[in-house]
Amino acid sequence: MRITTTALVIILCCFQSLQAQTTREEKKAIRVEKRIKKIERRDSISRVPVKSYVSLSLVSPITPFPRINVGYTRSLNTHWSVGGSVGVGFQGLPYTNEGTSNYSLYEVRPEVLYFIGKGEKYTNYIGLELFYINSKETLLFDTFNPVNDANGTVELVAFDRADYQRVKNGFLVNFGEYTRLSNKLMLRVNFGLGMRFKDNRYSDIQNASFVRFGFEDGFFFDDTNPRRDEGFSTGVEFNMDFRLIYKLD
Image 1 (tube, rainbow, N blue to C red):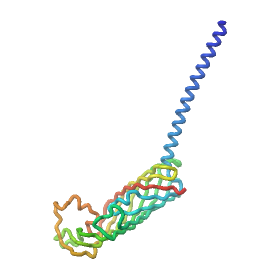
Image 2: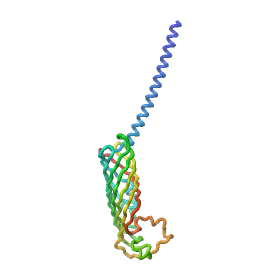
Image 3: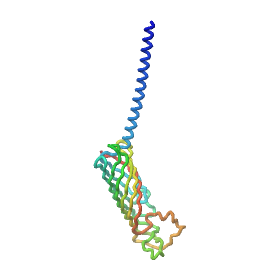
Image 4: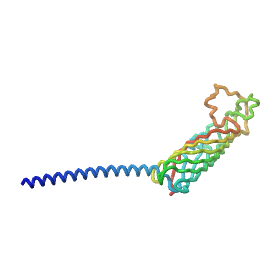
């Protein structure tokens, strides 16, 4: 009887030990499974389009010069992609300047992208983008700072109506990131810094008059108007864009 009891105790202890070991292995398996799912989720978010995609700018329609901008990008290999976008603006778009008419715009933006990462798990990229923008509109009851200021005696020209044209070109060094929204949709966040060359032109000015530009006229605010200064200028260009992407393959 004593031998039987001892044997039962030994068997029970072995069973409990095996059960505890199984529980530990199950917990370890659960942790490993969670870790794998976390890695898969991270990879699915960070993986960039494999071959090609089309994109739509979500920022361009709400800029001071609104337009619809669509793009196409195609990869050359695991690191390099080439593409570009075109934009068209027209009167009637939301946020079109209320004091204008006959508004039109077109732009071209070719770019080269280099993806940063290991294997196929690319999240961030750097790139070089060139741009050319040409816009025209008729301004109503506004002012501008003329190139010919008559030896400093003219600070602003006021008018009832004038035709305005802006030609801007330059380059941007871009940095950005892709985020997966679904199997087909992604979001591209882009920041760029570079140089721009701009030429503002005024013609067919009606009922022009010379005015002085004083502090009370809104020096700190109105002077930021990109249409104000006539003539050629250079400067630093900053760009921020959010693009909605649809993968083609």
